[in-house]
Image (cartoon, rainbow, N blue to C red; front, side, top):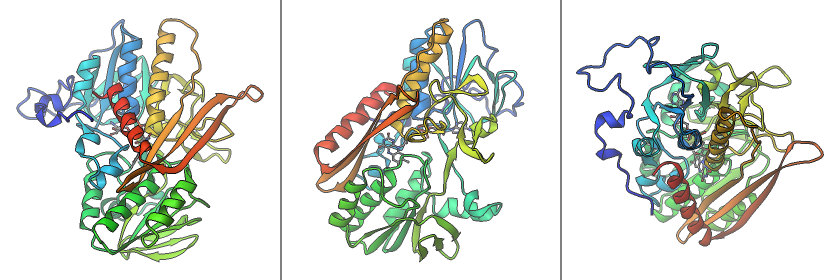
Length: 445
Ligand SMILES: Cc1cc2nc3c(=O)[nH]c(=O)nc-3n(C[C@H](O)[C@H](O)[C@H](O)COP(=O)(O)OP(=O)(O)OC[C@H]3O[C@@H](n4cnc5c(N)ncnc54)[C@H](O)[C@@H]3O)c2cc1C
């Protein structure tokens, strides 16, 4: 059982972060010059600044503190609390409670001994090794960017800001964990029937199997509550994947009247006001929708000027990095952790953009920095990946996918092996709950 959350009990100053001194103790927020220093300049201790306190950033903060005991570790996060993508689909339909998705962060900061500052990262001066935040400048010796993803609504609407804002407000997928997750939960609660459209982004995107899990659990909720709804999954891919066979069986055997999966249905245009969508596989009207535009690395990687370029000279949307050491190709003081990461291997492209991988890379990067600080040779290490997905709420049943990585001796490239566990079982539910407890115990509790 996951421990009860404590964020409600935290006093407001603590909820801002133990080190958010510029704001605490003041009668009214002072107008701060964003050029002023938020912290004193780094001392002789190496300062490691981590931007983004999600799965990857909180793991990195804990492990840099552990592996580089003399480091001054600073975690910058815009949200007052931690939000989790894993378990959030189950939370949407009340299979798990809020403790699984929303949690206090100050406990971990105090337990592991890093500074947590609640602020928005909005720029960098890499020549001066400085992060610019909403509350001032922070100097660094090593910088870790772990800001997760951003929604690329511009791919659909170009410069039409009104359409972007309207779609983000009314049809948000809440794939960026924050308070918007409540909006999706309320949408589902209030849904009285009709067609619910879900668009999937083109790969690579955050947690590839999870939109199908969401469809299954929404369908289970509709079935249980006798809501006369249909779910239309508009998928740009030619087939379901990963765990394609497990999901196909779940759709056909558990929800034949509810879920329709449409392959090759990349979005061509969308009218959010008239609730009409044109895809490569046909045109559809909807009553309500959860719309996922393409995903890209979070703004901070763009602000740092560290987005990769493809062979066509266009931005790849993801960090330009060394695939074995996770440093920026043009600046080895900068590391990437989690979903922001760029391409790894010609065989499979990107590591799955999953919490499991973010957690694993957070530890690997912490070790790499510790080796550098100690003047030792830096060892290249590989993650693994494991994702459990619930397809049935009663009886509770899950399927899963596992990825292993090794370096191919002939080519020198990282090689991926994928194992789909397509047969849904209750045992995998137990494994899933053990997995989340193990991960949260690792960096959050
Ligand atoms: C519905 C759903 C289900 C999922 N299920 C699973 C699963 O079962 N297993 C699994 O392994 N993965 C799962 N995932 C994927 C997982 O959530 C992500 O891969 C993981 O969160 C990536 O970690 P991250 O640290 O890169 O990003 P995040 O966890 O999103 O953290 C990024 C942090 O950076 C902060 N940030 C961003 N920009 C700024 C800024 N400018 N200033 C300050 N802070 C900033 C954000 O507020 C956020 O807290 C799921 C995701 C979703 C949406």
